[in-house]
Image (cartoon, rainbow, N blue to C red; front, side, top):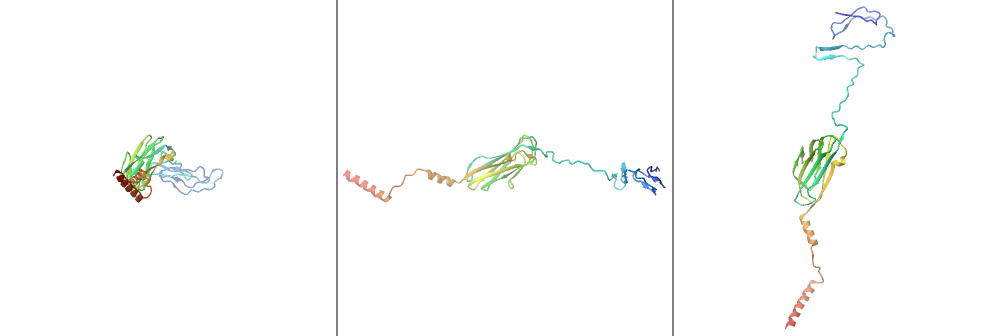
Length: 244
């Protein structure tokens, strides 16, 4: 057992017994007088640290910190590319501009990353217009859901180019506009380069035939057709009379 004396106190009746490092027992400390000049502050913080020894209940190391200590841990961002931007671009093209009812149209979407950083969690949303029926698709990376129109590419590395081809069938006439948009968790330098529309015109075969008839050459109609018929008959009869 060890005796701990208090130098800053005028009178101590009993001693302080320290049984071990984890437990300090203070018995009957009497203070006769305390001069204000002897103490810089009234409250004294004590730290008792147990290095290499475990708590009897939990088995974990215990540490007691004074009330004045502060936790200065710094926050670490979970996204290493936060605050940076990269140059992404999306192309949206159709293999033909004029289509007839029942014909197939192939749309090609190309996602490109020109850098300088990798693009995380990249995806494309393709909004097929009404009047075009989905047939099939192929992708060079990721997966495409034709029901939602979302093409999940994933991370797009610097210099990487990926493609999505969608085959559709024209079922109604009129102008059809296919809208596609590329997004990423990484900031994009120019978002306008990641949105593109492509338009086609679907025609009906009957309408095309009607236009040909309208533009064909026709003889103009002159006068009454009955009068022309009678005149033709008289001309024939006159010729026969002269021959006799």
